[in-house]
Structures are given as C-alpha cells and as structure tokens.
Image (cartoon, rainbow, N blue to C red; front, side, top):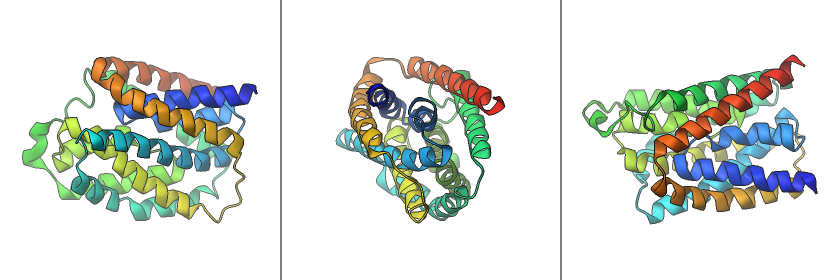
Length: 253
C-alpha cells in the first residue's frame, strides 16, 4: 500500500515538471522508481520510457490545444535521434547497473545546474537565434538526445528545448510543447529496441504512476501560466541536485 501511494505522489511530481517546463520530469522518474519503488536500474529505465511516453503525450495534447507545437520542426529534430535511440536502447541492456546509475546521477547534476544557472528558462536561446538557425547543429543535437533517451530512459527536454530555439528558430513559447513531440518519438523507438530484453514490469505500480503523471501534466500546463517559469525552474533544479546526491550516496554504499 505504501508503494502504491509513493507511486501516485512521484507520478504527480513528474507530470508537473513535464507539463510546466517540458523538462526535468523524466529525470525524476528513474530515481523514483529505483529508490522509492524498488525497481532495478534496468527495470527503471525501461519503465521510465513507458511513463515518459504516456505523460508526454498527455502534456503534448494540452500544448497542441493551445497551438504551441511546431510539428514540422519537432519531427525534423526527432528524426535525427531515432537511430541513436534504438542503438542506445539495445546497448543499455548490457551495461552494469552501477554504471547506469552513475551515468544517470551525472545527467541529473548537469540538468539541475543548467536550471539553476539561468534566470529565465533556457536563457541565451531566444527567438533572435532564428537568423543563425542551423540544420547541422540540430542534427547533431537530435542524435545526442536520442542516444540519451535510449540509454537512460529519459526524455531530455532540458536539452531539446534550448536546441529547438537556437538551432531551428522555434519561438520559446512553442519550444516546450515541441520538445514533448521529440521526447515521445525518441522514447517510442528506444522502448521498441528494448522489447526483446528480459525485464519484468510491475504494472501494479507503473499504472498509478502514469495516471497521476498524466493528471500532473495538465496541472503543470496551467501552473506554467500562473507562476514565473524561472521560479519553477529553480525548484526543479534544486530537486534534481538532491536526487543526484542521493544516487551518488547509493553508489558509494
């Protein structure tokens, strides 16, 4: 019963992050599954992909209704990451659990520091970048994002949003919604690549996690319209650093 309640609470937090920032939520999913719900790293990264797909789809629908999704730019960006996502998804099944955990902790630190350093979401990547929109840069970034998604089971919105703005000239107002499209595409391919691996899924915990994450994504979209994005960003940045610290301690023990 306790694990069920924890799954509900963790799902709500993940949904809030994805819905409000388009980033950070999936990075919270894996440690929540490992440290709160007892999943192994391999199980957690696979389950995370399922949760990320369901939650991001819900958040994407909310942004699509608001007209803040650039479909063509998102699909072009996602296309560059599909093969890397599939390859990394296959590779992750052969990586020791400690290595996966360490790589995830490093990613959480990088994401947390990025959020804390910037006064506004993804400052420096503004609509003025349209003059220097770069297809090669978008291709490289899309491939890197796909590899991260496939390997660690995260969406990588904190990488996707600034790159969409700087490399594909997507306005910041549409970058969060568009990043969700990229996340879904990469996560679907990565999950398909893992389909043949022998990883057990505890659906009794995954389903309530998804349910509250989906509700949280809608609330997060509304929350982003009421609170300053920079405030939300600092909250989730601090949380990510705390998560990374817990994972580092777990590795050492």
